[in-house]
Length: 177
Ligand code: ZN
Image 1 (cartoon, protein in one colour):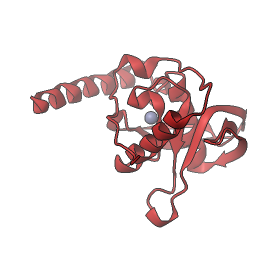
Image 2 (tube, protein in one colour):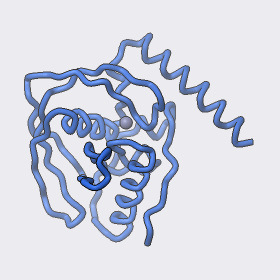
Image 3 (spheres, helix red, strand yellow):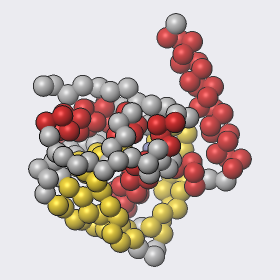
Image 4 (cartoon, protein in one colour):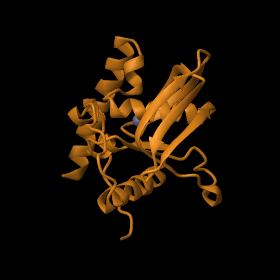
């Protein structure tokens, strides 16, 4: 089966605020879903996507922070990812999100994290991530717990972005008519 593009949910949406369920079985449907997620992420384009962003409330994320170089893609699919270690040192990156289009904010997070996950063969993997990869994996794992990058901002900034997104959604709905 060829991978399919899945519509990306836009904030505010109740599905983006839910704690996702662990994956219990890695079957063909899950492999197809992860292929669709990668296709959707590359097409957007983005460097990470979490299953709840396409309305699937399971603990699956995909990432590729080298996506600008199509010849050197490094897609990673993580099933039930867990941060097992975070550095005390923190770094600030300007973050965006495919569910919050065209809004960016500087967010401070641990500079490096050690992550444990299952790959699509069901094999346990563990790796340390630094720099952009570290920010990205933390951002995507947050999605699995119903947390968005704007939740790190103060109330006023967060509400401003949420109002912009409500307006954006109304405009999109009008265009579809
Ligand atoms: Zn996001």
